[in-house]
Length: 394
Image 1: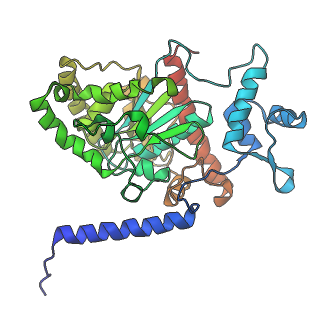
Image 2 (image 1 turned 45 degrees about the vertical axis):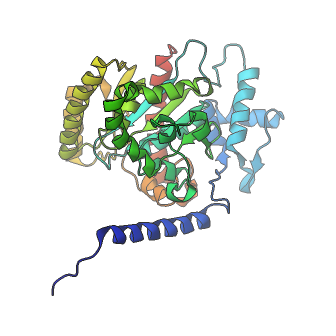
Image 3 (image 1 turned 90 degrees about the horizontal axis):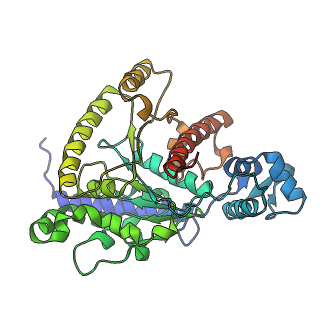
């Protein structure tokens, strides 16, 4: 029997609208009536971990009546909100011993804004998961962070509780477009459920930049210097943030080039399999050639650091271990020491549009969650160390 033909545009528009409607229904069921995410309480052990002090010292502060008052749960366990964690950080910074470490790691005069572009040419490499957890971790450890979703598919936005086609939020396109409707970047920044972490969400309109730029290059100097637009916008809010984390689209277009020109460092996610490595090699060759071209046009593409992050790693998978060894023989020190392991905790958290830092540990077996969060923290603390070294801190 012959299959009946159908109008492609009508069918996919109808299916897209239905999926969006059902996703919004799930979001309203999962989150508060205003459809904005809240954040769980953090245990005393977690708070001590992100503050960089011992649980005993944190307990002593509470017993002495210093700092915010935690919530007491079952069994006398104490929990803090993320806002209270921030309050503790400022208290320790102000009242700690003279030789104590600095608990508020904000930029000092002369330390430049760090802009980290998280990139990969191939989808499924863990790019958005990496950008999400890095931004949230930096906020939990006291940094002022701006997350920028440059992927029109808006997965980073969704993980922070935004559904672009329903929320009608602006995107970076609003401040890098070429017409008179351009807005200041401050007007498109939104808060998240993490204190210290703001976001510029994405929407499908971002794709317009890929079409507008070639036309603008033919008709204006602004178009010829398209690669400066994001960096100039960031200059307007330079004093508000320590780190900007950019989730780039999985393609080598004008959005990615604009982000890379504004970046001070690059994090490339890669799954240790042959096809992924082949794809990455082509990506690097194309990126290098295009970057050389825009460099001749005046782009500044000097970076503080470049690192490769191994994602979805399974140490028991012999071909993956061999591929990791192969990569290490070529890239040596530029591969992060800590790989991000493949974990059901990460994928299961994503089903409810949450990160590992949001989900309750009790939702998983203790071993599964602890292994995932330990690996995630190891990756993010290593990147944090690179950020601090770029500021000249040891």
